[in-house]
Length: 325
Image 1 (cartoon, rainbow, N blue to C red):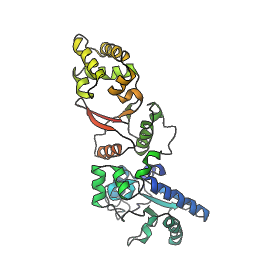
Image 2 (cartoon, rainbow, N blue to C red):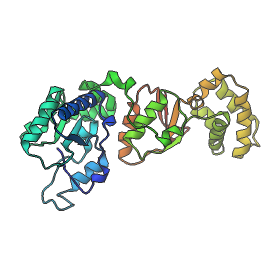
Image 3 (cartoon, helix red, strand yellow):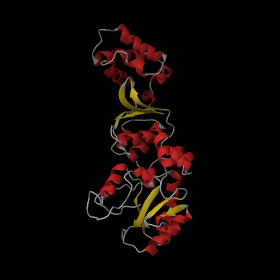
Image 4 (cartoon, helix red, strand yellow):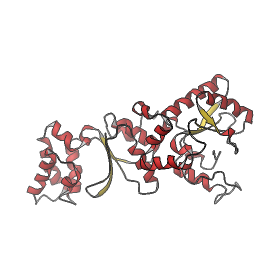
């Protein structure tokens, strides 16, 4: 259910790029239909993060006015907004202040493209439109799929675009945080999707040259001399790096260890390096772990990113979030 205009409106998300691909396509076509009919319909809200859902839930409870609650959902996973499968549509000129007849005409446009309208519910929600194959509210199965298999599994279950993941690129451009990672495809597209969905997420590493890789390893080896063999999958270059550490016990500082490991990497072939770390080819990125309840949602989203090969929550016993493609 839409919570309407609120003191949290500055946090409202209107990006269509965060919707399930098939639903996004339906919304875009419906909006074009509205425009052709002279209706100034626009999306006031698309995906709703948990932080905003919590603010909506507080209204009418711990935050007054209003005198009555505006939503009964404490979690965004009890609303299709939390899955990228619902939008709230209002008038660009008059906001929420349109008669029901106006919303009915907008609903005609959205129904044409397979969407369901909240105005048909017993408790009417006139601005609300969602993917037509969804029930009025997410079921326990939807929440379980989200928890265990991620967002893509939910989209697949309701036919909203799993097959279109590969071609789904958000509208966001000029994302300096992602550009700075110097990633190759498909890691770059995955990072754009992730950052568009969670703008406050901090990337800590992307593509590395040989010295950058050596320095990253050395920083951990200072704390744990077995870190390389405990972290990386077995390969010839992993063995060579660990052997250098073992044969140079007096190397104790990060700069000295970096120099040593860099000499090992410089002597390796490209194929050997590819077996060590996908950071070297720009096919991996790290993000700073989010150790709050929202972190679980973020991890589920990462696991559903297109063409993800591996996601690690720990490396060598340290809490690190690493995604590779």
